Image (cartoon, rainbow, N blue to C red; front, side, top):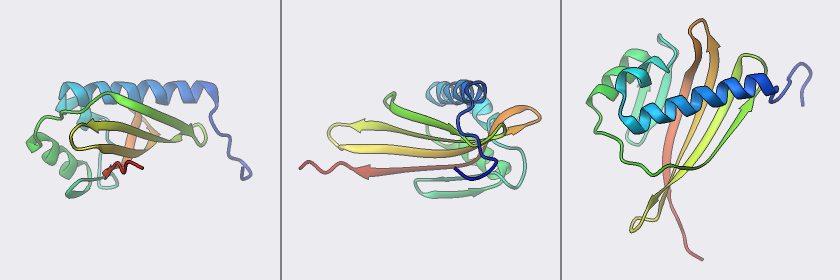
Length: 132
């Protein structure tokens, strides 16, 4: 990898994994305030979802307060890659299940902030499963 980049230092990887697992638990529980706290506070935070482009923590928080409760299967996979001591990328996917045969996917960029690990940017999408 490039000079100065140390991927997946064990202690940093563990920190981000715990933060992501806490985020996902809050998501499944519908804990809006905890979810909002997981995003970087301020105008640099972004969240692109299915049908929304949200810029800044205020827009993200406002959308989350009005969004319907999440109904989602547990994650079938997630991967954490830390880029150094202060930046990580988490990707995840889950099955939306029958009869829709849709796979949900998300990518998040996490940064170490004064308050701990926070999501700087998140993206959620779905795709139809094509049976061969």
